[in-house]
Amino acid sequence: MLNIPVHLASRSYDIKVGEGILSSAGSVLAALGKEQKISRAVIITDENVCKFGYAETVYDSILDADLSCSLISIPAGEQSKCVHEAEYLWNTLLELGADRKSVVITVGGGVVGDLGGFAAATFARGIRFFQIPTTLLAQVDSSVGGKVGIDLPLAKNMVGAFHQPLGVLVDVDVLQTLPEEQYLCGLGEVVKYAVSLDAELFRFLKDNAEKINRRDRTVLQQIVADCCRIKAAIVADDERETTGRRALLNYGHTFGHAFEIMSGFTLLHGKGVVLGSICAAKLAVKLGMINEALFEQHLELFRLLNLPFELPADIDWDRCFALMKHDKKAEFQNVKFVLPTGLGTCVLKEVPDSTQTLFGPQ
Image (tube, rainbow, N blue to C red; front, side, top):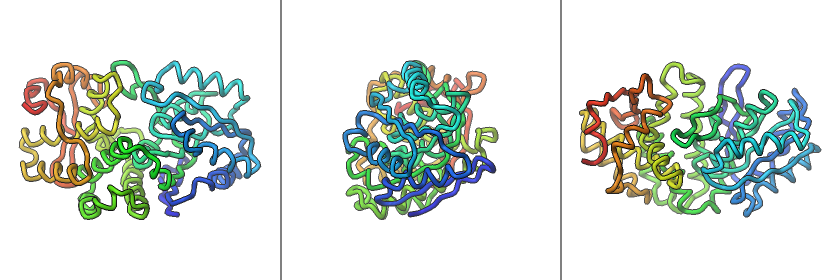
């Protein structure tokens, strides 16, 4: 088991990454509860995760650790990141007798982690929570850093909070049952780290593409750990996005979130990030920030990892640009993008309306 610390003073915690460690959740949680006792654990999961018994494994391990536990399941999908489902969780937590000594445990992908973490951040003005991500995307990104929240119809993740977890437990074995589309979505986030923040990771992905495509557990453990280390360092440096450094984690997301909204949230987040990354790199080429050769390197890695890299021909770029003005990084209605400056390096750059014609493939 690998241990990656997230250094945040009194809010510090550890990310544990390993193979076959899901059943250790109860003992890990019990150890964390020695200083501040846990009155009740409440697992929040979704219907898809329940099919494979992962939430039940966590539930049994918590009971084995002599802790009281309940389990709540929500509908799967981005549509659950809404006020209606948040209200359902608040009321259910109340009915279960949750109090300020309780702990919410999210077992699932990014939707479960974001929504469950938001419920924990707001119930009783904030109770503790623990993340057990079961998708590659959540393991390398959304479970780390304490961002929790829900969507608005015109803006993704616009309502939320910074609420750091007690800890994160990552079992890469669960990725063997992940549907291929979801697995590729996770790889989209992995490539994001490589292209924008870590050239060494980029080379590792390229050299191990075959093993990644067949979900080699050892390689996956290293990839997840590397991504978590990258994000942990950035979060420790800029927890609440006050310096702009944490915003660099949003490479591909400004375009990607707009694409998700335009699809009515039927487009998976990871695919949106992949398409958004292509748009960001293309924009960087048109602005003279990178050359075509580097852009082609990006596309080559997408090809090696079987990621979709062809933009739809019918994108409404005017609507896309309008939606991006609601992005959290926007200031005074000016859109800011994370754009590459080299392999593994990027900057946050404001792009004025006058350059709107640079958007997209035209």
